[in-house]
Image 1 (cartoon, rainbow, N blue to C red):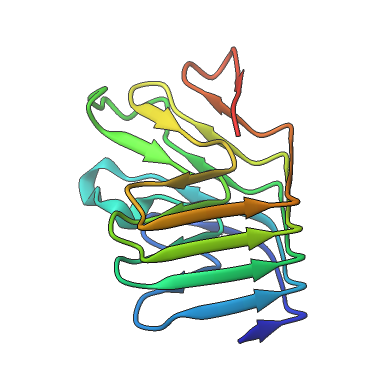
Image 2 (image 1 turned 60 degrees about the horizontal axis):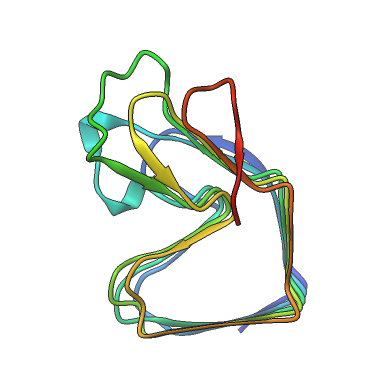
Amino acid sequence: TISYCTFDGGRIPSSANALTIQAADVTMTNCLFRDWHVQFSPRSYNTENNGGAFRIYPGQSVTMDNCTFTGNSLRASANDTGSSSTMLGGGAMYYSPGANSINISNTVFTDNYVYTQNYSAVGGALYADRVGQLTLQGCSFQHNYVCMNYNHPRQLA
């Protein structure tokens, strides 16, 4: 259980997040994830590059209540010559394929984003890729977006 924690600010090269859940189920209450920025690297691409603040691996479950994700991002440099078949996802959070269950309640997602020029991108706030069960209850999504050419953001949860 993680309660009343603040994960505040960081600019991270690829494969790092404020919090990564790999070998345990977790319950989070009253936590803040603010201003985490992950820089995507095509040279080390795998699902570890996804999720600006938070990532959960396959086989794990998350229960989250009354948390806030604000100002987090996943970015790919305009200089990266990537493929549109490479998918970036989750400005705030990313759930790997095969995560068991995700239950999120009373959580706020504000001003999170994914920036890319040469890749496909989804989930300005969160991206849950083939999870067993996803439940969102009483959550708020505001100003989360995916920007696929650095100039014209599309509003997406």
